Amino acid sequence: MSQEIELKLLVDGASKEKVVELCQSLAKDAEQVTMELGNRYFDTADLRLRQHDMGLRIRQRGEEREQTIKLAGKVLGGMHSRPEYNAVITADTPDLTLFEEDIWPDDFPLFDINRELEEIFATNFTRHRWHIPSGEGRIELVYDEGVIQAGEQQRAIAEVEIEVQQGELADAYRIARRLVTRLNARMGSLSKAARGYLLAGKTVLEPFTHAHFVPQEANDDVGSGLYRALTYALQYWQHNDACLGESPSVRAVAGITDGIRLSKVVLQQLATLEVDVSDHILRLEQMLGHLGWLSRYDGLTELTAEDGAYHRALKQYPKLYEAILEQQEHAVQLELVQSLSIRDDYQLTLLELGALCQQQPRHEQVAQLPLRQWAAQRLREDWQNVIDAFAKDGELKPEYYLKQLPLLQSSLQLGYCVGYLFDEEDRELFRAPWQDMVRGIREIMALKLLREAIKDNEDNQPDRLLNWQGVQLESLLYALEHSRKAALKQEPYWLN
Image (cartoon, rainbow, N blue to C red; front, side):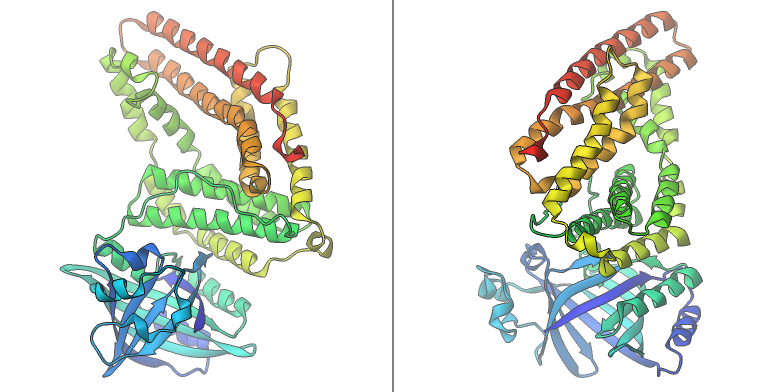
């Protein structure tokens, strides 16, 4: 068994000559080896290997064949890490019984799966390889160019892989930075196998649209917990970034935005512990500035959603409804986000945050501080700011609610980072009315946009529509007031 640790970068916009030239420059005196590789990937018709996050292939080089199984791993900042087992084979089809018995999960139906294996897709490419001395080992630098083939479908392969073979991770990231800045390389979170399954129509890449609580360990130190949370945030971001590349959509952009926000929340916590991440935070804030159009789009979607509170009423005013639909369409700026995602600063941020998660810098006192103790203290301090903002006397104005939304969202996201450490029922009881407030505040934005649309529209009953909008806003503020009072009465879950 070997533990594959590699960085993957996509260079499909660069010419072969430029890629090879730069790789040779980075490898200095290392010899370039070129080989032709054919790979056939296997699974059952119902993808039982894929369901276990396993990839099975036969690689052929000349007359030599080797079967490889890659087990569940992780992708972080373009760094792929997963166990890999190999076995020499002479047949055209793989045999899972050639691998060691103890690599399989409990209750894995080995023999059933082995009988039902079939070819799903193939990859054929030219590999250019260099071995670069690094630390006590080496870095294997490879450039693959070729195609993925699934039936009549083809997809190009043009990627650089930087595999750490007992070498220094820092050397791998240094090489990756040069590829990003010189070739506009992009971090790759999808393996050749993942892209092959997509091409074969066997899987669908769906955006993540809801964050989950990071599974923390109560006995961990603060640093371990925060870097685990940053790892989750970065993976969430990169998955949605891959979705944007495969099939651009507003849902993918929303997922990227959530991933960036969650990453920022974790970095802000690291900053309080004297870890120097100020440049990263600044870059994330700049990115979020390019994604601000999402709040307008979400507000307009609230008005037009068929299962929403306003759709049926607005449909009675065709001109107004069509105007809102048109605004919703014009609000979308997918091309802006696509151009942002291929910029060097965006890709370098992904790369450097991945390096941060691998290196996990921290001060000695951080390593000695129990995570649960710190989490309770930090949640108390953070939520005190929220309580101070929402515990004001009298009814709050719509503009005030909108102003406080980022503070509330940030605190809820901190809960995703460390809330797993506390009782689930207490946690959900506490968070529910605050989450209701987030939804209500977003609805305020929708009604604000509706008022603007009414004023700009040529319908014959603007006064009637404005009065209706005012009634809806008044009703919403009443509900928000109820949620606010309920939220302020909740017992904090971190005290139990």
